[in-house]
Length: 138
Length: 138
Image (cartoon, rainbow over the protein chains, first blue to last red):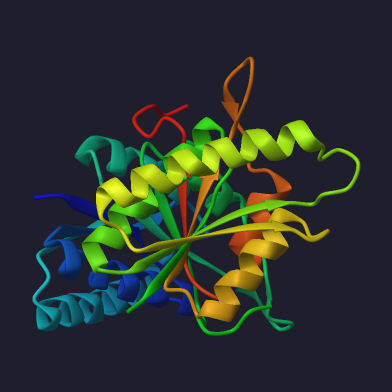
């Protein structure tokens, strides 16, 4: 059984990535590993942790309803999200990684952030890049 | 029937993208549209055109052998490859675009070229980025 790894953040681009990753897992009969990574440290406080928990509970419910076999990994170990994602993909010999590309509000312009660039370049497997609003071109 | 659009150049990263795109087309029962784009102008001479023709003949044979329904579009109309790829994906309401990420020889370091970045940002659909050597991480 193959493994798809998806980087998740409780934001529109994270939701879009998760939705698409779940579809791919269903299509291929693959297992889904959801990676929610925080560097940790001072900027990650108790409120953030609670918010993250509640978003991940919602993720659990959705994936269970979709009938996808999944695992959620919450990583707070001082690594950048890109490094965590690539490390998990290597460990599991993932088929591919799904990431969401974020829009910089308020102008809504899409940017290729440093995390996305590093995942694209360092990933040991293909990377599927998904936008929050898949129907709108910039 | 869905459509997958793949950017093809007769180089290792183009071959990798094409191979993966053909697998995805088989998996989904989708049609494959192979886009081979040149800006044209002075740097694109008769030799380039012949080399390109011969590579595309090979592509035809491989896709026919794989049983994939396909179409090859050779575009020389003064547009950057990224613009051509995005335009075709928009025209066909593609499910997703497949692109290859190239290695800069001789050091073999992977780079995210301006064409790849523009496809990732401007595409109206998800983009699957594939490396020439899918098993090797940098």
